[in-house]
Length: 172
Image (cartoon, rainbow, N blue to C red; front, side, top):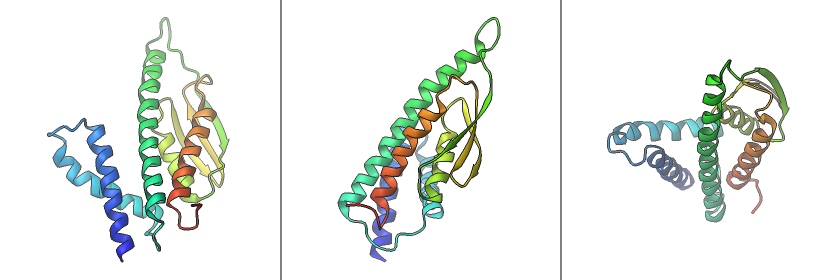
């Protein structure tokens, strides 16, 4: 039972910090955060399950740092990608878009990790995950010039580090 309490507290702290950073510590957003942070924590347990054993302080911290790094990467990609999508949409004399489907074979081992990959990939502007079939992920992209494969590979590495740190059977 102690493992679950520590796990919940760690997730509340990490997701709370991400909420504060995302809202720039807005007092107006505090009430929403009081509701949103516990819902997100509950969602993480729905996706990953409840830990059966403690993974250790170092691995917990390593996983939390990996999650924060992932959040920073997503925010950075969202800003740069959002600017790119806006540029493409208003490009004159006509929009600079040429939608296509990209199929990517993921190296992420777990179904939870693959679901996280597909969900987070939706946050990257100019792309939308349309299908997961085992290790194959089909993504709709705004243009062939959007480096979907590179973005997914980078995202996979980050998710794999978090999974390795937080899994009971993972490395030290």
